[in-house]
Length: 88
Image 1 (cartoon, helix red, strand yellow):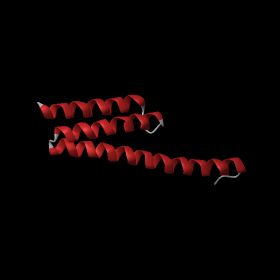
Image 2 (cartoon, helix red, strand yellow; image 1 turned 135 degrees about the vertical axis):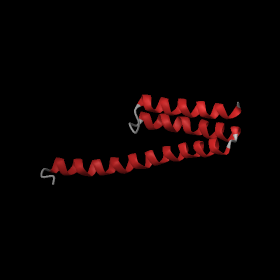
Image 3 (cartoon, one colour; image 1 turned 180 degrees about the horizontal axis):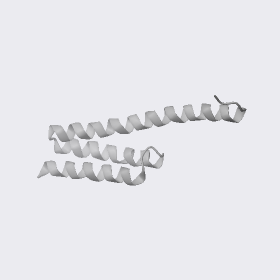
Image 4 (cartoon, one colour; image 1 turned 90 degrees about the horizontal axis):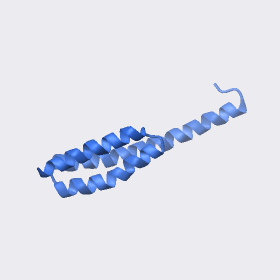
């Protein structure tokens, strides 16, 4: 257990950051799930709209430190590849 006052404060801050990060990660995953569902349904327009909504959310998560920058780019790239494959 934390002994010093600064260590106790650090524990409080970590708990707060954890909650914020959890909600941000959850929000990002919700957007990803919407894209996945649209791809599964085979609706090109719906999938494009979901991807356009999810892309800034994924990059925002990378900016905030939820994901690595390159992981975010890889996710967007793979999703857009799958969305584009629906049309062909």
